[in-house]
Length: 115
Length: 113
Image 1 (cartoon, each protein chain N blue to C red):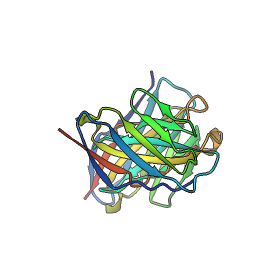
Image 2: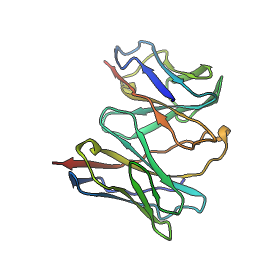
Image 3: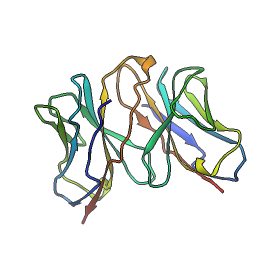
Image 4: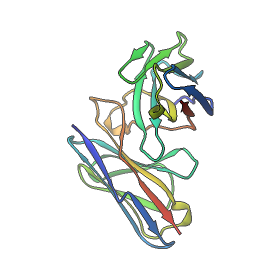
């Protein structure tokens, strides 16, 4: 699976949009970009994933560049409850149940939403 | 809806003692199950995964073992704990092929003294 690079930490003002970058310059054509977040002392939570088109759900938007070498997770209106470590993961799509479909977590970006 | 349970929530054990952590999933069948560990200040490390009853794959060599005696039950064990086994243990499940994502439990915080 391709490796990702994320900033170690970033601050965001409450109510403003939070834009979290992720570089994945070695991504392959069959690899998806996944985003998870981990609030302190909790298990990670799935946010969103995409292949090449931009995606949006109730939690966030995912913008993938045309060359797919980088992406941005956008939290449109950050709240204090969005303070967490955000993980960008690149992984081959569904390989079949027997392959395990494992996730490899890196260091992530520690996001602090300030009032 | 699906839910995942882990217990105990916290555990303090002496070095050399045995360990048994349990994870159960409700509301789904034939899930993939995963055990992760997160040492203090570190990232998540995949320890084991299982694609079916009795089928266990190990990702890293260690003194831990895993078992899946029932479809929705995943157990993490050790015969003799080490100090380095301290950490936050997370169980997760994935339902394929309907979804390619993983859903995590609340975790067990283990301290080995």
